[in-house]
Each structure stands twice: as C-alpha cells, then as structure tokens.
Amino acid sequence: ELLMGSRRFNELEYGLPRIPRSLLTQRLRTLEDAGVVTRKARGGSKRPEYHLTEAGADLIDVVMRLGEWGQKWVNHDIGLEDVDPALLVWDMHRRVNIELLPEERVVVQLDFHGAAKGTYWLVLEQPEPSVCMWDPGFEVDLFVTADTIAIHRVWMGMRSFAECVDDGLIELDGLSAYVKAFPGWFKLSVFSDVKPAGKTG
Image 1 (cartoon, rainbow, N blue to C red):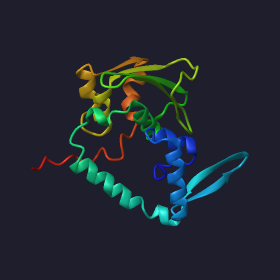
Image 2: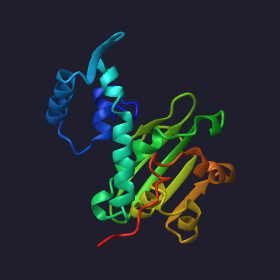
Image 3: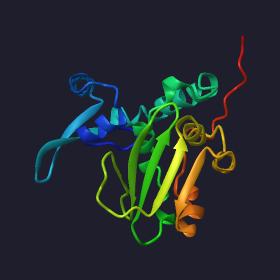
Image 4: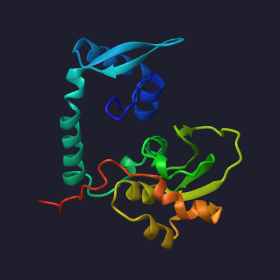
C-alpha cells in the first residue's frame, strides 16, 4: 500500500481491509523501527502521514517482482477467496487515467453481484478521483452492474472488458459517451500484463 502511494492511516486501512486496526498499527511501528517507514506531520492535522524512507523505496523492485511472480505462477484464475469488491474499487480509484477523464465530474455507481455483493461509488474528477463506500450524495452519471468474479478477472488481465459485456457479465447504463469511454478510464492492475504460466505438476 505504501508503495502504491497510500500515506494516511485510513488509506492503508482501505487498502488492507482484512487487517485489524491494532495489527496495522503494530506493523507500521515495526516498519518504523526497521527504518523502512517514517512518520511525518501533516499540516493542520494531528494525524501523521507515513512515508517510505530511502531503504523502504529500495524495496519497490523487490515487491513488484514478488507480485509478478505471484501473478505468473500462483494466480491461474480468480477464486472465491480472491474476491473483495471493496479492495477492487479502492485499487480502481488509484489506477485512473486522469488525462482521459472528461472535464466535468462523473459519478459512477458500481453494483456487484454473484460471489460477493456490494455497492460502491467512484467520483471521477480531476485532479484526484475518490472512492466512496457510502452514497456520496451526487447524482449518478453511470451505473455499472457486474459479476464480481468476472470484473476481477478483467482487472487482472485474464479477460477483456468487451468479452464480459458481450456475455452479459458486465452492464453499463448512462450517457453513451460515458459508456463508451469507461473502460479506457482505468489502467487495470499493475500486474495485468503478466500472463499466468501453465500449471505444472
């Protein structure tokens, strides 16, 4: 999460939804003690930000290689244990192609069904998009209804968005310009270009 740009405690919580707050606090302290992370005061707030030290930044290549290895040799497909809509939406919001967004704010409501259910909102605007776990109170411009496993597969580069739309696994409802542009607003997972190797036995 720190390598992906999360700086505040609540951002780290969103990106690591299965870790209790107490354990997250403990792990951050451990990383501080190891000289990997440092806390910095945030202007006008008592809550600090967490930043990688030079030693922490040197781990970027190591962590990315581990992720690529996992995508190639472990993640042959998306299973029930891999499905987490909240984590997916959080990842989507930080992989937005900012330069491709329209000038006006676009509010996207994502309704997931199937293996895991949930409704979330993406507020796409320049310079910084945001994700909402509750209705942000804006008029929705684009509705996206998706099978949870299918859209996870798209995100990881295992299926194309167009294929899932053709199969009825993803549906979009809104202005035609938004419907057409939606897939291009996102860069997909950082590991989506890594193709799984054939199973070995």
